[in-house]
Length: 598
Image (cartoon, rainbow, N blue to C red; front, side, top):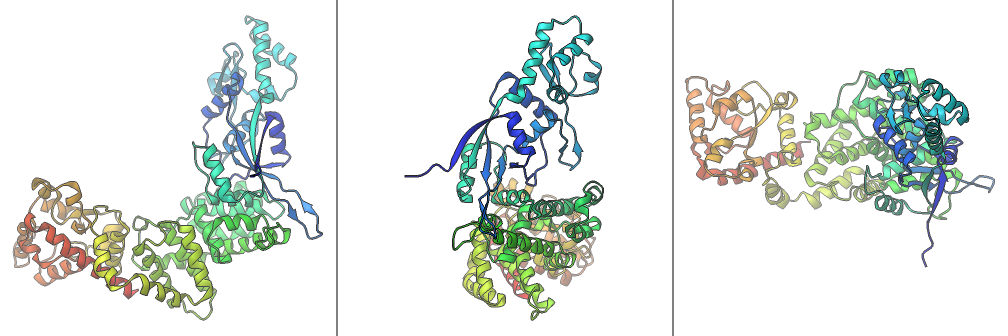
């Protein structure tokens, strides 16, 4: 018989908020500042006033941890669902400040009109209107309904005193309304907790396992968890918004004195956006590279002090986990590590975030970089080669597309048991056979999705080779990518549409090239046999019509780098399908040559 792994309770709002205030229930902020606007806080107060349900909140009991002296330390509860509602209550009922999306501390003041029984977000007009109580928190926390009613009636003598007293009494009763809690047992595994969460909370943002890990980190004040959570949170935010540095320095002076802040201060002058990790990315990289484990559920267990052999929870294990996570987080944030890794990815031809669709592939490449950096027997040049090769291999094969956690866990354990170079060579032999290059890759290039990672690898190969744009003499492919140049059709789209080709047919990867817009406009809807023969005339001393190429050998080299069959000079719509097949094979050959050049 299955034992019940949760309990359902009802608490008065004032009691629940007291639990939060004295630390019995931890609200870890989980990378999510208060995102509700004032109107949602107003609506919550209105629902409570009218006696409407506001939903359950979910807490998860931290496990009891065995201390060094053998005693058990009872873990506190973590709020894993309901943070926005509880923060709204703290703001409106207790009058506390909240941290908004811009990480500014602000007050959200909710006003109440006893005559109309309506709520509104405080504004200048309300402050001038005597019918409104401008801040309900001042009333709720005053404790004396007689004084409140008397003061209100002095300003509004024409209103029925009984009405005022009744409605202000209802306002004060908000703090005594019930809020339901679902308290999950500490011994539930993270997959079960996630499943419960999803079943109960079908709306809103579904928490990830990284969210649970962040909750565990932030709730452990004894092991300095709040600063570790802030380090991860702030670093990711600084990557996107370097100007946030001054905000941290001026408004979080306690954190600004930590090693974490010193390690991330270089970001204040950093504008590179090739790798802007989320807290999920950062947690995964820091954990996997340090612990040789790929499942975030293992991190949650270790942060709680789980001994995987005895299945008990020990303070010493939790302490060691927090210390190792601190060191691996600092290693992740290290300026030299981060910049050299980004430089490796960039030197492989991935010069724009638009070329990187798989954040998981990028994360694991950084894991490899951090692991290899610890091996003094491997040169920086060899590290660069191995990391870039693995990254491109991961993208080409879609290695981390499905079940990334399982794949992370498998790969890191393989790498932990043998030299990485040896492991890379073994997976290349298994997955990059001649049949992959000659058949599998060409089949996967048969797609109309311009954001295909394979097309991104093809573009990276052209950047790596310093190739010129299609029909360009001076402008490189890198220039076109960086300056948001356009992807155009070799067989013009309108030409194919006029010849009854469908969207899926004319929008083929094998029909795409990176081309200057003015060249594309000049070509218009002409058939390839028309405009390529005009190009040939241009290279034989004729008038420049398309770009600046003036020599036939330059034109042929440009076509070769873009994998365009030389038959293009005679092709019309009748040869379109054959052209696509030929170009896919040429593109696959170029990608193969590029891969083995890394």
